Image (cartoon, rainbow, N blue to C red; front, side, top):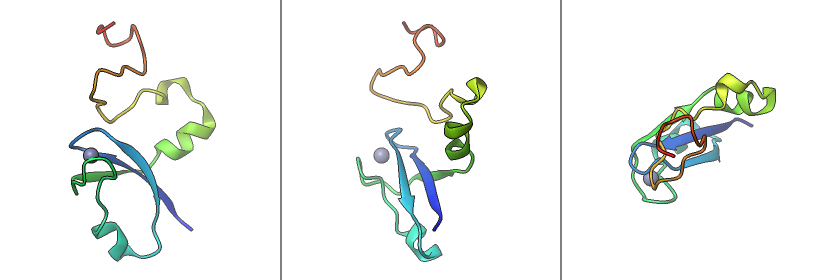
Amino acid sequence: MPIFEYCCEECGKKFEKLIYRDSEEAELVCPDCGQQHLHRELSTFAAHTSGAPADRAPRCPSSGGMCPTPGACGMN
Ligand SMILES: [Zn+2]
């Protein structure tokens, strides 16, 4: 059962979703803002388990002033 990780381009929300059929992906919306501007994160799931430090940086820009890596972005 494929679990894909998605990132909302509107609000930066990341979420995982079980996809049973391709048509389900077309109907996906962001659970936070309801927009359909999502892109699939293909490799982040594996990166989580491997724990490679270089892969820890989020590819999706997070909004709301939450910095996952304090000091690395100059905003802290
Ligand atoms: Zn969103």
